[in-house]
Amino acid sequence: MSDSRVDQLSRHLEIPFPTPRLAEIAQRALSVDKELKGDQVKRSISVEDNMLKVDFDCISVRMLRVSTTSFFEMLTMVTNTMEMFDVVE
Amino acid sequence: MPIALGLEGSANKLGIGIIEHDEKSELPAKVLSNIRDTYITPPGQGFLPRDTAQHHRDCILEVLAKAMKEANLTPDDIDVICFTKGPGMGAPLTSVAIVARTIALMWNKPMVGVNHCIGHIEMGREITGANNPVVLYVSGGNTQVIAYSQNRYRIFGETLDIAIGNCLDRFARILGLSNDPNPGYNIEQCAKRGKNFVSLPYTVKGMDVSFSGILSHIEMLAEEQLKTGAVTPEDLCFSLQETLFAMLVEITERAMAHIGSQEVLLVGGVACNERLQEMMGMMAEQRNGKVFATDERFCIDNGIMIAQAGLLAYKTGYETPIENTTCTQRFRTDEVYVAWRD
Image (cartoon, helix red, strand yellow):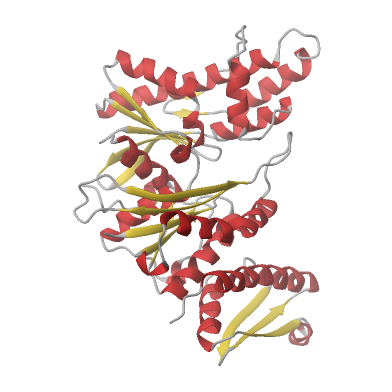
């Protein structure tokens, strides 16, 4: 029963990046900070080609909202940094 | 010639600086740029973690662009990216660390996580040339008397409750003083016009100090006696400074006597206070010692001090792998192994 509850409160996000390299950088930069409430939120970040894939599993709607909001704040910081400071290799 | 870029954002200041050391570490370090943007709250209000983090996120890229431009460097020229690992407020620290990680990965540079307090100490030593001083680290979040011994900065005494800067900031809020450029500065100016000394509790406990009781006491005085005109805000600012600084001078002097040092180095935001520098100077003079202090560019939180401490560690071969570049709100000064000193 608890399993089905968790399933209902999960979210899958896909964020496209210009190149696989930038997608991987985002994944590595964002994966470092663990969720503050690890017992209430499971978050996994992976990369496939130029796509950043993020999965959230939360025990409550509130935690899902908090977790995704803070993830988007950090993601925006990463993409803005990339736009301004990437070097052409 | 190694060059380090440092990012700092553990409290309400967002700072980015770039520093260069010469090959043999003989010449003084060269400050290539040192840019800061301070989050200033309205009078009567402190800075909260969430809003402070938002401020940092809003201005960090602009500050980074300015720092690179002023130093006239391209990413290629930079050897290492240093960031504040802690101590400090979690959300602001993390907001800065995420940018540090992103540029380190894009530019393919190693990273070094720096203890904020060590940053203050190393920058103070570099700027003033103090060799082996007793360090008084006084700021909005920390109050510590520190001396170096066997590869650690050891804490000889510290506050048992709130930091001295926190005590001053909160009293400024009670008086409704401006937070621009910072509340401590405005208390200092107000204190200069104080005429009468109001007796306050004096709480030195061995090598430690306590400020929260003094704050409660002066809050009560302000509430009861300002409206009757028995005391003025100027008198209270003056009396608060005199009392707090006398306590700091006492424990600093005891640390000097204990380790046999003739030097005092003042670092942290409160170290800018000229009255504190003066009182410490009088004590040092009686002991034939000397006080070293820096100006607001290096006292108040900045990026260059993070670059300085990070570069010292980097030159000994220290790096922080990307997966360990987390931040931590609690990170004591004596946890850091100081490999760069004998």
